[in-house]
Amino acid sequence: MKKLPQKTPETLLLQDSLANVESIGRFDRVHTRRALHERGRKTIIRTCLAPTDKDDIPLRALAQAATANYIQQTFFPEAELQIVAPVNTLERVNGASGAREAAYRLFDFILYHGPLSVQPQNAHRRFMFDKAELPFVDPGRIACVMRGKREAAKLEKQATRRSSDWNPYLAAHIALHDVVESVSPVDLEFSTDGGPIVREPERIISIGAQSERSFYNARMRCRDTNVYVQGRVDATGQLFTRDSQPAYLRSPAGKHFDPEIAEFQVLSEATFDQPWLQIGNTMKSLSHLRSLYDAGFEAIGSRGLGEPAELAVS
Image (tube, rainbow, N blue to C red; front, side, top):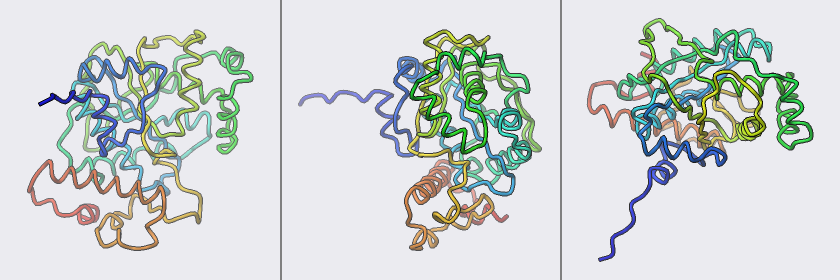
């Protein structure tokens, strides 16, 4: 009988529904492959959550952190997972005065009510803010490199919706996704940071939605043309999830039902049968969130924790 070829770690990652990875960034794919084969040795896995309104955070945002947690534990078990809220960038570039409070609130929900609350404890996970002073990236050099490029037009369109400038936003992306020392740990009320898990990391693998492609392509273009940033790691990688937009962003008003983080009851089986929830990307995101909950319960076995909706209101 002919022996079937073994699946590579990359194939297993792309076929795992809980990982929710649609594709791997092609420009630095070799580094992602190497990190997978080395089980995340000397690697940081970094995902950014950027809510700007403490009272209007989508329930789906909980899935982003839980997905990153699942990917790290399953495919990069020796890596350090960093869940980052770029509050200083949001305040400086977007003028989002409520970003810091929103981030604390979201971190608390992630830890104590989201899927992470029913998943096995992860000693390799840290919560971070971006530093007030990020490594300098020359905006003039960025403008020169990006002039007339397709990515610049896409970034400008995105920035217009935020009423901000794409150039400093791209500079912040370069610093956050290419420099290890661009973030610092956050001590939460019931969770104190225990310090670095990975000493002298050699690579950063970022996780983001489909909308991150424009920033990723622009980052790679800036890297190829030697746009300088102090402390940049030599090896980066990118995982794109199946989400079209970051899960922390609200859907357009009136487009479809998109519950906030306090509305955990939508995760009940009965609610999933309601016809008004059978709508596009929101349903997919909420279904994925429910799957992460269920996987967490299965992993910890019978510990008397109850259903997710009961956890949320306890």
